[in-house]
Amino acid sequence: MLLSFKLRNYRSFKDLQEFSMLPDEGKNEFPENIAKISDRLSLLRTAVVYGANAAGKSNLVKAFYYFRNLILKGAALYPGDKLSPAYDPFRFSNETREAPVIFEIDFLLNNIPYSYTLSLSEKFILKEELYFEPHARKALLFKRTKDTYTFGDSLRGKKAVVKELTASNQLYLSNAAQNNMPQLTEIFNYFRNLLIPMLPLSAIEKNYFKRIFELLESKESPAFNEKFKALLTGLDTGIKDFRLQRNPDGSLQVFTIHKMLDSKTNTQNNAELTLEEESLGTQRLFVLIGILLRALQKGRTLIIDEFERSLHPRITQYFMELFNNPTTNPHNAQLIIATHNTNFLSRDYKLRRDQIWLTEKRKNISELYALSDIQGIRKGIPYDKWYMSGRFGAIPNISFLEPILKRDM
Image 1 (tube, rainbow, N blue to C red):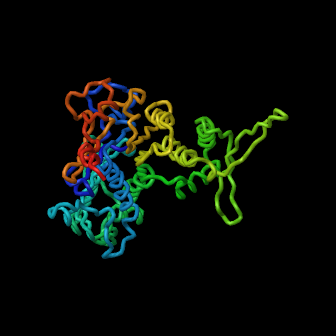
Image 2: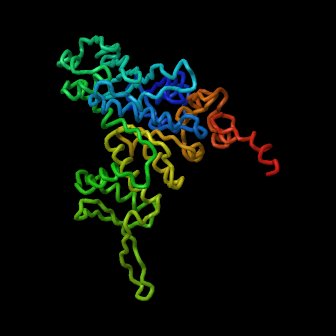
Image 3: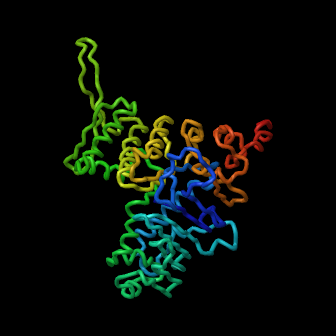
């Protein structure tokens, strides 16, 4: 599970900003939205991120995405390769445009907290640190400053060998996983399998579609297949069933099955459509159902930009409820979404103040803050109406356009 994520000097985030899934202990609304991990630690199950266009919410998702991508591919870089797009500093200041980009993530794996920090320039890893807290005390696994390394007593395996294999623009964590250091392979696999940031999906995003198709086809998990069908047919799409087909050329195809009424004989027959013939919302729903169910099944943290695109608000509300409900989310999966949809702020969605995050841009610099950080915001007020009125900030300022538009053409 994700505890927190910090970033500095990445795209529109010039100064240090922190996104946190730690609940505000002073807020007591909707306790079911909190996963109690231990007597010392509880975490939020869901969060939403709002902001005006270009305010920074998509940049937050990109930070997660390219930070993770660098970890997954950090052993494959050749000497001299650039570290972009993970290295993408704030460009509107001479102080920052060539300064280091910094990421820090705190997460929970097997009920043990970990903290991993990266500082990078265009072509070099300047700092890489990994700590953990196996016994409520922070301990070092490894740290490096450029090519100088320090290893903690808890780290086992061929540390020196991996050090020699790690180029100045490669990640030690990535090389350690590639060279079978068990402790660090487990951390690497957290980023590969449990932290899933997703940029906006196209109607049928090929990679995710292929994975879901193959999972359904393999019938590896009967419970997954059963729940997938129940959601696809139960969300008022008109679909009664579906079938999968592998074509001779190796392409994958889904056919949706609808009931067709013959008015003359008063009998019902099946009619089929290809998934491509369905609405964009239904196409996207097919992919999202698989992604969300897999996350609930595996206890993943999903971070999705434009989550609600092409979906009815009631469907997005239902998905949010699946993650906030301990019964349907027994493995403490997390869902974090960047959105413009103010329905998530309504009372029907039952979100706590610490689950609602806002991005606002001033002088091209993005700031990130939770609704619970704003003084005087009481439990139960109409968050959606207050947000649209501008009381929380994080909305576009377009009032200055009116005098211009009133002028004669």
